[in-house]
Image 1 (cartoon, helix red, strand yellow):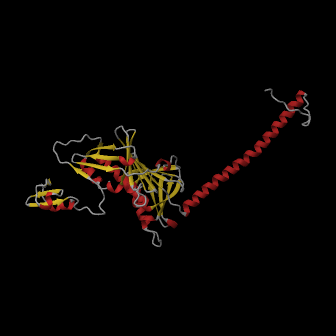
Image 2 (image 1 turned 30 degrees about the horizontal axis):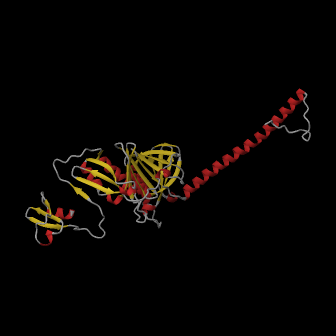
Image 3 (image 1 turned 135 degrees about the vertical axis):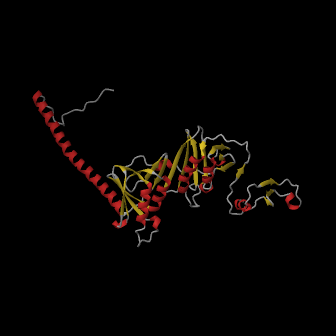
Amino acid sequence: MLNYLKALGGNFVKLIPSSGSASGLRATDKGLKVICGSHQSFIPGDAWIGEKTPLSFCQVRVSPNNTVMPNMSGIELAEALARVIPFASKEENRPILQCVKATQKDGKLTLVASDGFRLAMVSLDFEDGEGEALINASELVGLIPALRKAKRIRLGFQNGGEKLASCSLVLDTELIRYKWQSQEGEYPDYSKVIPLEFQATATFDTKEALKASQSLTAIWYDDSLKREYRPITLTIGNGKVILEAKEDRGKAEIEADTSGEVKTAVSARYLAQALKACGGMVELKASPSNSPMMFCIDGYRLVVMPMATEDTVKATTKEAEGKAKAQATTEAEVKPKRKRRGKAEAEDVAKAEEDEGVELPPDEVREPVYAEA
């Protein structure tokens, strides 16, 4: 229908719902009468709808008296969706992870999406109340440019019952009302995969990091891996972040505000998408290669699983061996001290008994002492 309206090329298009006054088939079928200049046509119901057409609906209202009491900025919501939607799963056998989870709670609107390897979450200031809905990410992609134009929006949740599938997400602009029925299912507890402690942090410019990672991925010329799946090793410490290709083929250094030291690796594709989603200055929190890393900026958090490479595995193994060796050394030092302490205590007791002139009977003569009940 959008292509049809564009083909008309007129500034004014008049759409008249069929009233049954026409003759023949048009008198009984539902449809629209379209008038644009000298052009007239009739569009029957279900036009341009085929077997593969997604079941999405849009209510269009055109009225000079229609007003919306906004509770959120359209641009703010558009940017939040743009940071979350790319990280929803594309696999058809994982319908729940194909969705964006929208939750209203404690004065916040939280949007979450994950594909099992990455988790994107953004929280926006919102009005009090509670609501929740699971909306397929593919249905929200086209909403982003519309929200940038709408500017004034009102978002809310309609609960039709106790089940999540009966809930709906409703979005009002001055012209259009969007309504999505929540998908039935339970979203995984994503809070368990968000790390709470990190070994190192770094704040740097995403543009410089993106340019460096793209130049390093182009160095591989004898690898069966696709360019976007090649690993990039990240080393944080000493006021910089070092990005390295495999086998010391190339590296790039980026100035950063750092705290702590760590070495880990990540897929070049995951790194590029994370840097593009964040933009500007980003804070990267990381731990050794077996723990997720997290990108943070302005209420937006993106958790990314690392890749295991020979360098990161060796670094992790060396660190674990160092800790085990230090623990063994500490235990070895503590044991002799305990023996010397026990011997010293025995000598002190014997000396005290000798001074007081008390002679203790042998063990076989001693009688047990029982406390009275």
